Amino acid sequence: MADPRDEPSDGTPVEGAVATETAPPPVLAERGAPPPPTGVLGLLVREQSIIVPIVAVIAALAIGAVLIRAQGVNPTYAYQSLFTYSFGTADGLQATFEKMVPLILCGLAVVIPLRVGLFNIGAQGQLMSGAICAAAAAHAVREAPGFLIAVIAMVAGILGGAMWASIAGALKATRGVHEVISTIMLNSIAAGLIDYLVNGPLKDPSQSYPSSYPAPDGAKFQALGFVPIGLPIALVLAILVAWMLRRTTLGFQFETIGRNRHAASYAGIKLGGMIVLAMAVAGALAGLSGSIEYLEIDPYRYQDGIAGSLGFDGITIALLARSSPLGTIPAALLVGALRAGSSTLMFNTGIQPEIVDMLLAITLLLVSLPIIAKLIFRRHTAKSSALASSWGS
Image (cartoon, rainbow, N blue to C red; front, top):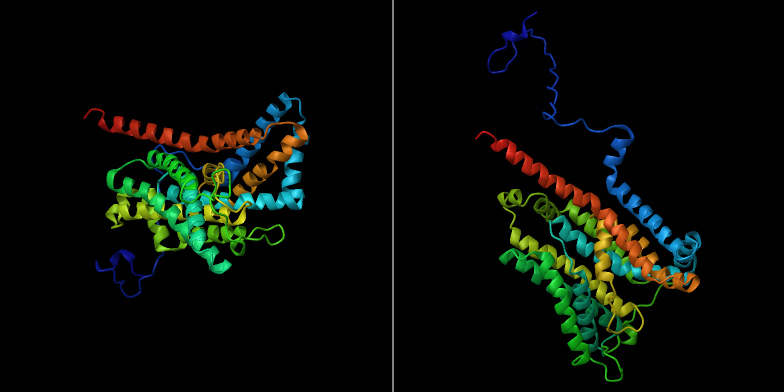
């Protein structure tokens, strides 16, 4: 039998040689790197995107229970009152679903920029911009058929929110202005500008308080039983955003920029255009939520407080969902239930509804801790590596 070593240098085996399958060389672990965890610890590490939010919610409820007990109220009864109304009654379930709609959309408005490496704090202003644009458009075409008015109002809301968010995207892309600063400032600018509009050009003279003209009767969204019209829209958009991020070229470009901007630029992706586009898509979703609030929630007009804290709650939703578009759905369900049941909690127990804000704040803090720790240790590791590499040079 011929020795395989007798094969020619071009790789052609000699006659009679026996082909032997060579196993690939083992992948050597990086020097000093610990082996991946196994068992329960390994499961916790692999599924941390699910486990961390659950632990954060449970811990927040436990801390809330201590504070509720300190006010002389049984925490079990308090939570039972809150969730029984939100999930156990038709009115409460409808209120929960109504809260879910803007929460999902505003959560998506934060998730998309996060996947590009941006932090959109401006969903509140983008929601308000979309709502006022929807109100103005609906009043302008008030003589049209109701269905057409609703479509025009939603398109106007989408464009209004996209335009408002694009300002922050353009400032980031062209001047390097940090999006956190610009979006916070744009929230205040939107509030002031809209306050002028509802006290001036768009004010309904029949109202004693600042308020826009109402949505025409034919354009108002009517719930299907206890399911609001906006809920299927929000659910479909969450699925579409998840599909876009995972299955399309645009989603790949967003993800590449978020993971490594330098590599994305080297690969030919136009960073400036993608940043503006990501912010525009986020603003469009937040603006759509504002237009749906205008068309779906009584009194069907833009007035002070229409946004509440929905835009800021979108930040909680996005972090609770761990930047997952589909994760915004259960996150919005939980936060929507807390928001919907806060009034019942006050009536049944005497506890102020601000306890819900406290629970959400604690949840947000606990969910954010792993992210903050990761950033801190990443910078510490990078600094240590730089010092080690420069030692003795």
